[in-house]
Image (cartoon, rainbow, N blue to C red; front, top):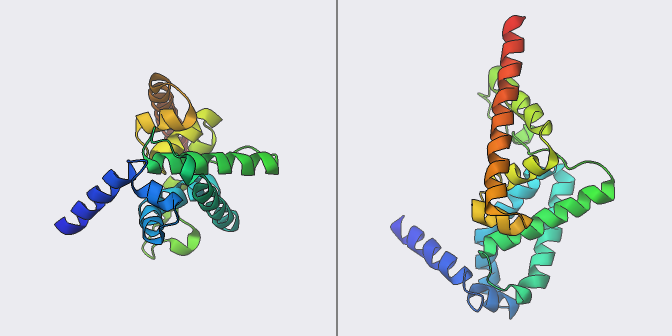
Length: 196
């Protein structure tokens, strides 16, 4: 366990060096590529899956993101963490996907695909997730996007600011407003249910 944590810390430190792991990736080092995608891949896949509700489109967009990451590794300047850089690429791929489809960006996914539901999942838990999903869908696009990066991408405030091109203060205010709107909306739905 400790050895795994130390190895992960070493990998993350190497990834943050432009000439380190990503430099080796850019030169075609297969082991470095495997290591990068082992660390960054799950965050990218979670982010895309929660932005796009269609599993087929999700798979395609994750592959498109990976292709762009591979093509752009030589241009990584080290101004952010490599995982943040990869999430920025994923965010742009999702934006392009929704522009092509000429529809608003999908909400943050709040529940796993139905095939992944636990057998003991109760009706109340499903109802709570559905209420949360509807509340997230009601958020303005900017708030949904930043909340998605924070929750699904597990990005820090600084990383979100870099990826979105917004100030750190704007990111914090936007997240605060998004959370306040969610709480308010969920209270409204709870009050509405209690009044029945």
